Length: 327
Image (cartoon, rainbow, N blue to C red; front, side, top):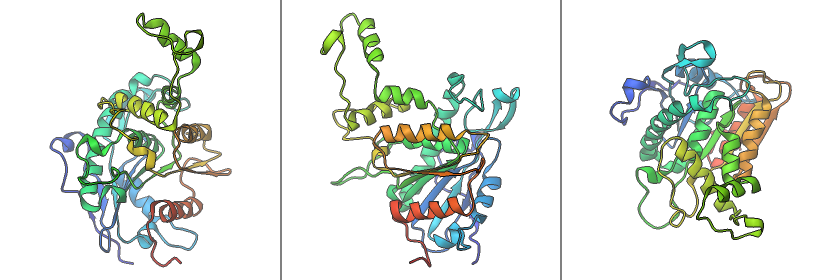
């Protein structure tokens, strides 16, 4: 199969080049039907990750490009940031972090990168949505790219810029693919979605004008799936300085209808599998449709061909993409 040419997107916001290198874009070899945006891991770049990933083959010996010739692949590169964990050496990373073992340490270091990268990737999503429709845009990443893109999948709303006109449900991303990653602020997102009895009591104690609707002065909290989703959405949007969703006007966040794939090696020594499981559990808590694939005794990478097979199956069954040459 002739390899599609690399190119660069034309529809980019002013000023984005200054902060982020041009993404590597692999054009489709047939009519453009889907766009897949994948973020690399910490210290890597678009070329190193993207070209290697696209060489990966399924158990039948086919690549994703061969199976999905109508897919356009976009691989952004993170801008260089000083790494606190590496004695402030500048490296390509989507956001800074303090600990490789426990991403919850020094959360204050993560805000700027999460906010800036979210805005940058939002612009890429909007550009691809104009070309093929938001339902045909798939987001994902590897390692820190998984963490960053997963956070984006929860904070992105088409209403941030424009919603399609006409009757019907608002459009959403077509799907999410995460490999060997975690969810930034996972514990806090979970707590925001379902406040504990202690959290609700603390809120009552700090509000001199609050009224107690439940027993022992505890305010009753709506624990429906929609309420969890809206609380979680507004929490992650606040992290990246986006306006909150209007609970009276918003039926549910956009992410509520996006299927998610998470793959993780059980022997991963860089991002422990428990962090992937934690991300899965938070998404399940939010009522999302999660495909979880652990790879036994495998380390920090996508497993070939097993994980590539699983991604193809996910794109086929959950996203609705039709692979060429498969029954």
